[in-house]
Length: 111
Length: 112
Image (cartoon, rainbow over all chains, first blue to last red; front, side, top):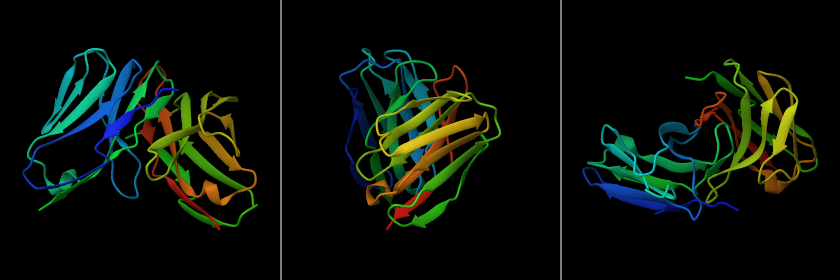
């Protein structure tokens, strides 16, 4: 059974601080995705990484896929209250196939 | 944004009653998925479909069945609802050949 472990599960920080969320597995994934979910809504895709060592930036968010394609990280620079939400990583083994989700990281950014 | 709707958005039902949740898409995507979301578990796959009348089980399929008679509709049925099936249910779709999935707004189901 493939598992994705996310850490930390909860994170409460002040506006302006930096943070990193980790997503780790013992399995190799063909791709790794990050989603953000707000209360009462479905997850929204932020980014997909497919190549080992790949780094993608989305404004203040930086996503990295590990060289061995078993882990990923999400780094947020100068967090803002609008970044508050549940962040989920998800891995897949083939195109159009099943996604395996991590447990999620609940981020709260206080003004 | 992918056009995905779920109905109903909220439902309260009693133990032992049948319940059907509907997912409707306007994008003609081949793949459709049903997940449940519970605190501390992220999203877990219940069933998925890779075409009309083509479905397969996910990791938590016991107590659930699905049907897909048209490309645009994917139905999830709880034959006899139990309190352990109280959850938020999400439908997702995937473009054929794409890794990404796009999610609907969810259905909050409470079984009393």
